[in-house]
Image 1 (cartoon, one colour):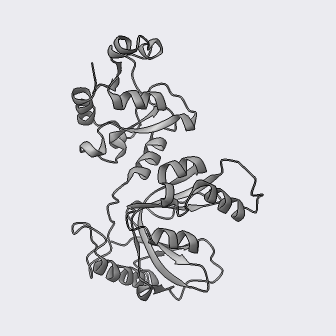
Image 2 (spheres, rainbow, N blue to C red):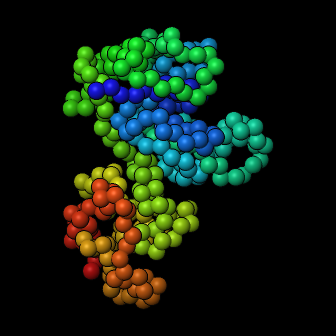
Length: 306
């Protein structure tokens, strides 16, 4: 098979901060313009190139997902994995790229390319840009592994990754084999963004659509064996998320919202929540993104207070 690769121009400060953080399992390669990105499919490689005159490919990651997000949500989801030290610095950088006044307090919408398994080459392993790279490119260029430069890039990147052991053995591209997709291992940030979009940015129970009030909830917590997949998530209003995690509410395997009697018993309150009891939740259209029945059963049996 053949796959695509993207070589994207990156900010030097973004690169330097992230390569100093060996603990990161995902990064957000963001664009200040909020542009839509459709150049790759999940599991293809997204590579970083420094600004001219340092015309080298210096690292990359496995492409997992892309969309447009308000700055506030991007920061909540990824923190320093956005390649900046704090949200104020991120705001200033976006304003500079957009030629706006630094005092602009807008919740800028930015384009996000979410990458997992990020890797950063040592300087001795930096890869010169291919001959077909044009100096006037300011965003990115796509290559295909069936073509000369794309094939050469795949081989060069693959050789370095095989030495770094970036991927698990079952996922590592064969050193001299055909190019193949790599299964992205989604992290917490990617999970938040994916679930937010899967539920159309509306609460699964109330259909509330005030984005700052919504949170992605794991049905089965990651620490208890749950995954960072859409099928293990629900988008809930923040108060419902807290109650769900604490076991005061649940969603049954037949996709109905239930409220524990313990809210009334312990807090002498909860009328608003009991009005939601027994209602069907919204579920995504795609079968593979709908709540996993086994995970819901686990929550009912192990978390819900009944």
